[in-house]
View (cartoon, rainbow, N blue to C red):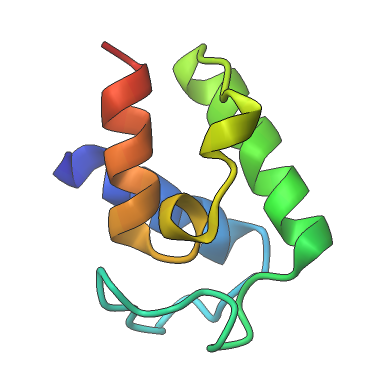
Length: 81
């Protein structure tokens, strides 16, 4: 799971959602910290689906699954099995 979290962090930094030297806690809100907006979320979902070869069911598109590194990592871990 640590690798998934690091991949998501690298994606956010490589695509200018956050500064390269920034630190983000596992449970920090991506929206409240100004890192993610609705367009960015769509791009992140595309990245996750392509990178991990998964489909994300519509009912799983919730703030709990996409507003923190922990939520995103847990979602990918569940779907990639």
